[in-house]
Structure formats: structure tokens, C-alpha cells
Length: 410
Length: 124
Image (cartoon, rainbow over all chains, first blue to last red; front, side, top):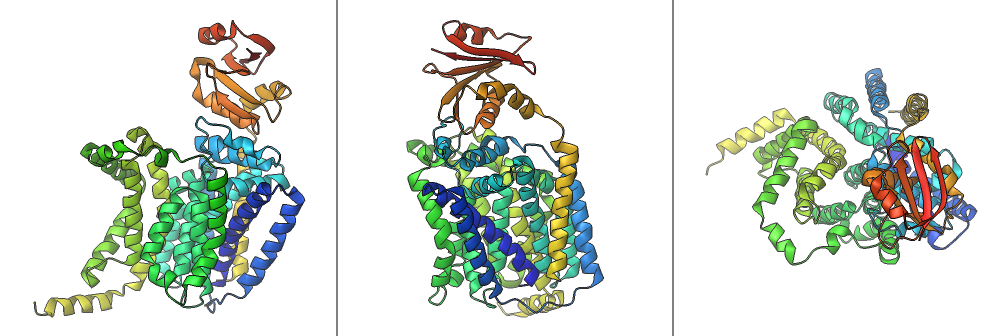
């Protein structure tokens, strides 16, 4: 991994660290200054730990690589400026920034759980807790929250570019510039919701697993990022289960399971304390019962869900979906099974669809208000995976292998 | 790529975006700001430990949750029949008959108009 990428990992680890320690300090009723000291010590420990991670020898970057980076960032900044909203979208002020306001008040933060109607107090706290901590340090909540979201949003294309530009500058540059130019990516980033943060954590988890052979500390980073996904949004739990299922060999083999546990332990403990000690039940989980089977056998619901996926893909994610399908096709031709990472992304899409299937809410409303955000969570990872896959598919070798397969006797 | 250049580019982009946001977006008041300014006098009556129910004109759902956002960390819930402390918000120029009929049996603790809305804090 490039050293520059590790700085972005440090940002993600710091977000996880700040949110967890601040939440735990609220639970333990510690004064704010104690949480500041605790977080500073933890950050110092993180710096020392990151310093020991092995990184690849940096290949000398040329002017073109830097030029693409700067040009892409300028494109994204202009997109962000055009789509900025003062308080973010409805969910930002009605859920995430609202929760941050409660958590910022150490004496009354538990009031958050006394709101019952449309309060969504079961949503995990990675984002609100980080914002609450920052808002206690920087009193201008509006600017602090916005800067935080923008830093996360900008980090996503940058790390994709950093991690792929040495494989193929052409593919990496195209992917980077397309993402930076994507109005919808900037728009959702400007919503100030936790979906972009979740997308960031998931992307980093997937990148880290690609570097396990360089240093086992990348397993810790990968599982810590997956832990942060759980700590960021409820659907992070779905991601974590599927991630573990797909990468169990890398994560749970004899020599690696300890590293996996170290990484995921702290976010999981914080999530456990929050869910068991404070959070109300989740609306989708709580309402399951006899009606669930009816929903599962209602074919109209499948059709509705398919139509919404189709509409969203055509409206906002057409290029990346075509690229993913191209990778699936290439995988099928090359080795009869698509790439594992691509299968993981497709499995997450199916799992999300299953959640919609059993949703207690009005299906149209639920799909309309959230499906595009779920795809937004997966899009950066899908882009990274596609570029890595296509850059690794040497067309000459591919043709040779295809020809060999053709000549093989039946 | 050199980490220093990448991180500097990332941070400069964040700062530039924030400055653009500050100048073009944050400096202009929006609907939430209007409601927040209107709610300032009420804040003196509602302690952080208190809970208040909100009744908005024409059952304006967005206004109820904006009020929750503005009055946090107090507990703010939509109106129900068991409500004790009730904050009603109606458009000053267009009185709401539903709100008036609910308020007719309650004691008005505080009432004022601001930014085009009339705020009434009442109890049972």
C-alpha cells in the first residue's frame, strides 16, 4: 500500500477512535476534558501503530499523475459547491446532526432515546458521536459538520486513485475523473448523512484485504473498518456478515483470526454497549412475524424492488453497473466464476433487496427514500474493484487463455 | 505519490469547499434558520430536561422535526391527546382551526409572533 493511502486510513481510524471513545466517556459520565485526554492518547498510540505498518516503496509519480489528481479534485469541488445544502438533507438534520446535538450535551444526551416518533434512536453513533466531539471543540457546528463530510467525501476518490494509478493510469484516471465529475456522488455527499461515511469504511476494508500479504496489520485495519461499518449504520451489520463469509479464509485462518478479532473487537464492543444498553429496537427487526412469509411470497414486491433498482441504475449508476457486468462476464469467460470481490458487491445488493422485501414500511416509500443511498454506499467499492480487476486482466493473457479453453477437448 | 502533496491537496480542497459553502450557502438563512430564530424566546421556558409536544399548522410534519432539531437536547414529540406541555406553531396570517380548537381548552403560558409564525406554549 502507498504511504499516502495510510494517511487516509489514519483519518478513518481516527473517526472510529473519536466516536467510540467519546461515546464510552458519555456512558462512563466522564468530564469532557477526560475524553479529550483519552482521545489524544489513543491518537498518539494510533500514530505509533501506523508508523510500524509496512508500505510499498513509492514509485516516482509523474506530473500527469499529480495533474489528474488536482484536476479531479477541482472538478469535485465545483460539483460540491453547486450541490451544497446548508443543513443537509432531511435525514441529516432530523437524524444524524440531531443525534450529534444530543450527544454533544453530556448531561442530557440520553434524552435522545426519549424521543419516540421518527427518532431513529437505534441508528449507530459513528457519525453523530464524532460530530458531537468536534462540535464541543469547534463551536460553529454548521462549518465543522460540513468540513467533516467534505473531507470524507473527497478522501473516497483520492484513495481509489492512489490505490489504482500504479496498476493502470488510464483506467484509474478515467474512474477517478468520472467519480469526481459525478453530480449525484457530490449531491449525496452534501446530504451530510452517514451513507458516505459507510461507503468510505467499506472501501477501506476492501482495499486493506488486498494488502494482507504485505503485512498482517492490514487484517486488523480491514476488520477495524468493517467494525466501523457496523458502528456507522445498521446495514453495516449486513455488510460485516457477508464480508466475513466471503473473506473467511483471509480473516479466520489459524494465523490470522487473532488479527481479525483485534481489529473488530473495539467497534463491536461499542456497538454492543449501545444496542444492548441504550438503543430502542430496530423497526424492521421488531415487526417481523407471521406477515414476513406473506411478504416473501408476494411476487409483486420482487417486481417493485427490481423496478426501483433498474430505475436507479439507469438514472444514476449506469456506467459503473455496466463496468461491473463486464467484469462478471470476463470472470465467467476466464475462470467460469466471477471475481470474489464482485460477487461480494452483488451479494450485498441481494441482501439489501431482501431487507426491502420484509420491510414493514410502505415499500414504494422505503425504496424511494433509501435505495439510491444504499447504492451510493457500494459505488466507491464497486469502482475500486472494477478498476483493479480490469487493470489486472491482461488482454493478451486473457486472449491466450480463452484460446486454450476453446481448444480443450470436451 | 508523495504523501505530503496528496494530503495537502486533500486538505486544501476541503478548506476551499468549506469557504465556498460559508460564502455561498451558510451565510444565507433557510427555513430551518427562520424556525430557529422564531423558537429563541420559547427556549427560555423549556428546560433541557423537559419534554414538549408540538402541534404544527396543517399537521406540517417537517416543521415538527425542525422544532425537535432546534430545541435539542430537550425531548420534542408530535402532539397527542395526552400531551401536557404543548407548543403550537401556526402561520400568523392564516389561523389554523384545528389548532385553535385544541388550544381552546388549554392555559396559554406564552404567546408571540415572529418571522411570520405565531408560537403558543400551553399546558393542560
